Image (cartoon, rainbow, N blue to C red; front, side, top):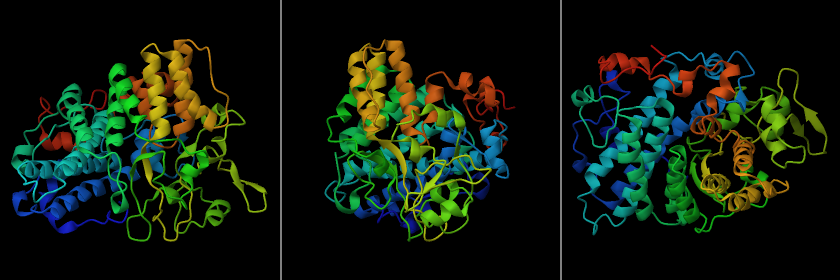
Length: 477
């Protein structure tokens, strides 16, 4: 998949062209998609274009998912935009809000164009028709899932629209988007996607990815019964925890291992690398020289002391998640200099050209599935069974398993384990919100009750200019 992640741009430029002043909605142009998509390869290339649109969006997804929560903070104050995200003083037209809105609707627009065309495609010519539909619906569902978790009610677009039509599209209720797009897309995707791929197709969305994402959707909606069903199915598809937790973040090894389910894919050396290594590295030669990181580093996404304190001393995940320094080739520990308390090693690797890292963004991996499964089982009154899956994750980290817990005790242990296992992987803020703990946890950091959601980009509110169908989120007017 990484090898085919370079964009086949000519067709995609046509289907995403639009008036510059309306780029955030990103409606399709008047070019007929029938003129663009004919063969199986045409559709395959178009689907790659949907995948590729996730690359710029997930470069900054950590700000919503990690920096906003209590595991990460902006320790270096000159990164002003990140400080505002961290301390709940975000401006209504903050760059990350505008770019994220644009990016997600670009994904949706590309997906809608494919789905509008492929339905009538001849399977004798488009041999992988079902797979193309499954991948596209998975990717559209992920985009809408992120949108509703970030912004709440958003425009619900399922077909290509013109620029003029888009001015009359209002915000749709979250529940309707879940019921009519996200869940339906994922239910269809899981029936059309293969269990695994080989060769250059490795990295595409699979049946397991669709089922796992659907389970996350069910957990978010507190539908624990359906979440349990889907997660049980994922456990039968051949996934397994790696023996060594640190191997998850060793980028000299294949990232498509037994624990991998779905990543946002990046590839160094071809203009498709990620910025995570440069962005999260402390500005100190101790770290940049040790890993061989070229280019400017950005001093972002530092672990908090509360996260550091949450780890047991013998937890094998602690050193890579909340490092106080590095250990050199001779076994000597070199602490970070004053002004840098700790950093996460989860994205540290050699970078030959600045902002061109090989590190992927992990959207779903098997440990996440096991912890979701434990949560669903526990909420469904099956606490003893839940501990079996919780303990698999703990024991891989070198910690003793739990036994004889009440349902309430198990719930708190599962929440803690998700924090320790998945820090800096885009889960913490959304876990706090979906479990109703966001305001209680983040109030000391400046959060107000309405900040469960982020503001809609004010430029969008003013562009539509009809508060009856397109209001700003409460508290941000």
